Amino acid sequence: MLQGARVVLGVTGGIAAYKSIEVCRRLVDAGAHVQPVLTKGAGRFVGETTFSALASEPVRNSLWDEDDPIPHTTLGQGADVIVVAPATARLLADYASGRSNDLLTATLIATRAPVVICPAMHTEMWEHPAVQDNLAVLRRRGVHVVDPESGRLAGGDVGHGRLADPARIVAAVDAVLTEPDLAGVNVLVTAGGTREAIDPVRFIGNRSSGKQGHAIAEVAARRGATVTLVTTSDQPVTGPIEVISVVSAAEMHEAVASRSAQADVVVMSAAVADFRPVSVAGEKIKKSGGIPEIRLEPTVDILAELGGNKRAGQILVGFAAETTDVAANAQSKLAAKNADLLVANDVSAPSVGFEHDTNEVVIYGAAGTATEVALTTKVGVAERVLDAVLDLRLQSPAP
Ligand code: CTP
Image 1 (cartoon, rainbow, N blue to C red):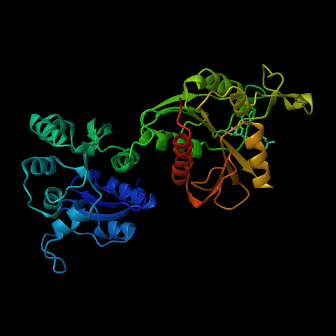
Image 2: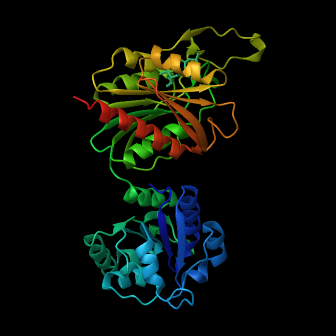
Image 3: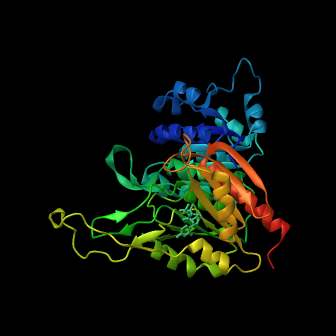
């Protein structure tokens, strides 16, 4: 977990150094204390002030620091994790051979913290046996490597060697710091708002972005769960997650119903339409035909159906986005749908719910518990919801 983690962010001299600014920002956003360490080469590509301002920490770049006579051991011993992004071929060679000729390489040798290396270089360099041998040495020593991706490289070339996406890098750092407390648990998550077609171009929908559900899926996967995500959202997902894309409530129902028997935990964070048009017009409804009358019929309440068929040990989590009487509505849904946990939020409050990156919720438990989660990121809410799931599993272990 990145919240409160002490992260040394090493930046070496490659064009991808500009992307490590985004890595720095994401680490800080996730609550980490980031100490940037730039090599001389990195300083030719990016400015120290950018990193200092983002991290609220002065950049370190010298072994000869007036205030700290042994900066490499101070940094190495104080870190929970060290991440180097981008890592050049030279950094890999120095680190693999144990050379400590600047602050970053000396810090890497002076630490017992886990290390995440994110190489970035031209394809020819990446494929060179010397680079691959150095990486093999580092991997054997337990260093975590976030492999580069294919795409556009400096100078307009296209090939393998581009620095991994910042989101992937931050997820990898988070994974290294995260205890796999959900290992062996099969988690099914739904996300996004369903769309109920009226005609080939129109639909009845809602404002759910899917961000909260995607965060739950990603955090569950990071915590070791086997995760299936049934989603209406096309936002990218980070981690080993099986993604099933759906559009309508009926498709979501089918996707969930065919997988729920294997799931130890089902998290229904999707905003599922309660009603859909009885029939879908085959052609676009024309204005000239007058005001259309669209008759609706109810959809299946997926959570209530799961609650009716719940097997022993299975945990069902519902969500409720409310604008009034949040507590009363949430508690009555919890009981009516036979859920174990109901996560309620007041979507009329600022920075809460739909489309935002933050959320503020209360997690109601079937045993009468109410856990308040103050305004935090959707990842933070995901952590707390999964903590509550874990607590339930520990109270009554699955048969
Ligand atoms: N839900 C569901 N299937 C539906 C409607 C809702 O599985 N057809 C689930 C949602 O995913 C959520 C929970 O039920 O986990 C509560 O959804 P919500 O829309 O808040 O409640 P409703 O029961 O639809 O009641 P209302 O819309 O009247 O508040």
